[in-house]
Length: 266
Image 1 (cartoon, rainbow, N blue to C red):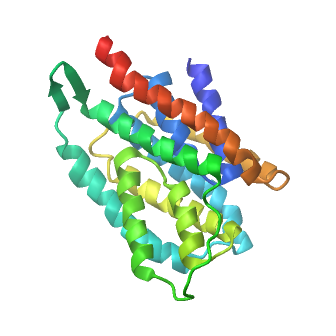
Image 2: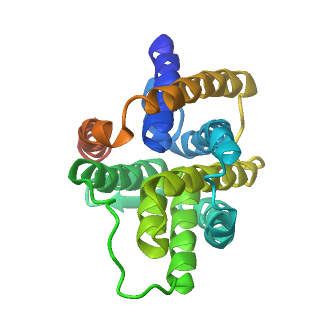
Image 3: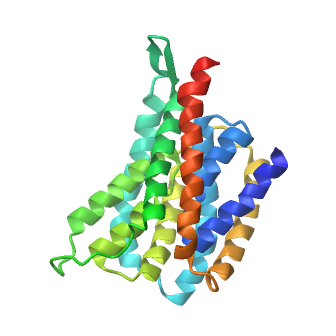
């Protein structure tokens, strides 16, 4: 199982390099179900893996000049506030049992994984239906209030369930700012790297970290994203997104069934 888990570390990097996101969609289930790590720790480790891997992947985009730093700042600052709110205020104060009556038990860890699975369902739907296409806005004026509120929302999600939120960031940048898809993906990867690492650092005093394991896993993911970036130059990531979307959909259904049905019976 550990060998399979480390194999998925490379796959996580490959996916992020090819389609510009999706790392946390794989990393959290891998930590939770293959390495048997509790949900809160799994989301924390995911933030580190996604943060470092995104940083490695965004270096090339920075050199190409495709990262819009002004947009990253406007979107990123509210995101940071959302992350800190989730990691420092919400998660530590969740009760051990969300529901524990009527024969139903929903622990804090199960609740986080179910929310994560619901996010996976939304992400899978977007990838399968290709909803992230650019829309024509009625006005050329940038709605900065909406942009920053989207940043805050992404930050709260990132902090709570350890997901980078790339599938939310890219459509927001395309639809609100009318930037090209390439620039949106590059800027999104940069935002994800900053957000995820800040989320991880904010949890260091709450979660024990096995650094040898985490660094080994992350190193393999970095190798994966470097390979994925090269593959993306030859294969268009959009063509692979629907396939990955179906895979994510199956994983999400498995997590929901496992947490809400199988564990209840056991």
